[in-house]
Amino acid sequence: MSAPGGTIAALIVAAGRGVRAGGGVPKQYRPLGGRAVLARSVAAFADHPRIGPVLVVIGPGDGPLFAAHVGRHVETVPGAESRAGSVRAGLAALAGRGVGRVLIHDGARPLVSAALIDRVIDALEDGPAAAPALPVTDALWRGVEGEVLATQPRDGLFRAQTPQGFHFEAIRAGHAAHAADAADDVTVARDAGLRVRIVAGDEDNLKLTVAEDFMRAEKLLGGAPDIRVGTGYDVHALGPGDGIVLCGVSVPHDGALIGHSDADVAMHAITDALYGALAEGDIGRHFPPSDPQWKGAASEIFLRHAGGRAAERGYRIAAIDCTIVCERPRIGPHAAAMAARIADILGIAPGRVGIKATTSERLGFTGRGEGIAAQATATLIAP
Image 1 (cartoon, rainbow, N blue to C red):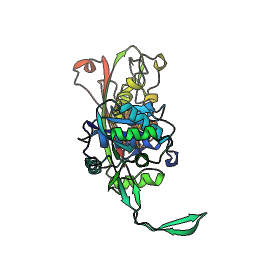
Image 2 (image 1 turned 90 degrees about the horizontal axis):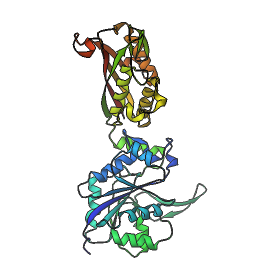
Image 3 (image 1 turned 180 degrees about the vertical axis):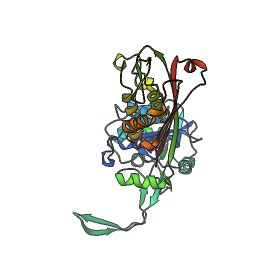
Image 4 (image 1 turned 120 degrees about the vertical axis):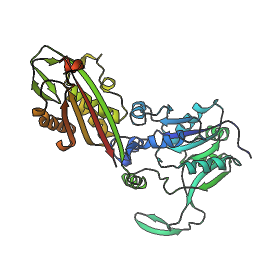
């Protein structure tokens, strides 16, 4: 049986809650090596040259989680209470798009390799279904209440993995006729009379279920740190007043910075550097100036939010460096207090915050004393 024509689609099932893994959010949105689990699963297929459309089935109401933690521009559809129902929803969304074959993958298997995807695709050239699996090598027992009752022969037993591949119309018909839930799509295919070919699985293609699985996955990633660097730049004009606030520290001056919030130009630059390292835009994206509730707001609100976003995504702040550009006031006498304030807000050591100043040699708006500028760099690191 030759493979049908059309594109090869990937259907990633990620509508579950994953409460056993802990972490406060569904496991597919927890960080793994600095990236969300689901972001890694999506990338494995979206970046594969043989895969066409990628569709992700997410939990109803998980749209904001997906946007925040995955952020990739792939299509999503809401899932159902059962896994089979979620797969049916995904297959229905792919219908009519010229899909000839589909690979159905668990979103909680983030370490799937391109080679494994290729093996499943290749196996579909001469059969309607194929799935990766690993032979069982350990001794098997049957037990009740902590006591071994009998041994179980392991000959011919395999540990199932995903992605499981199918000719699209065959598996769609199989699901339509399969009213009950199913542990995986091979069960549906077998009940529909489809021959399922076994291809070699991969020990690294583990499914994350409990907290210990995350530790193992981190080791499989090689422990190489995920390092991100972001930059920020901000400018505020000077107007009448008797002092300014820089990095949360009040500094006497014969003017005041003008802005929608408290106009802390240095803290704004640092905040934007953190958002930039996370590829999450700038302050205006999270706290729109059109919203009156932020008028006159303390800039530490923005900085705490940016630092919190970094922590939520599994990053720690390795270093902050900020340069304030002005002729006056003198920044040096206040630099240590500024660094300490930034460090306190972000929950890091003051030695990880550098605050310095420079002039523009009396050139431009800063040289004329019309405003103050600041630029910052933030370095984030995840194990």
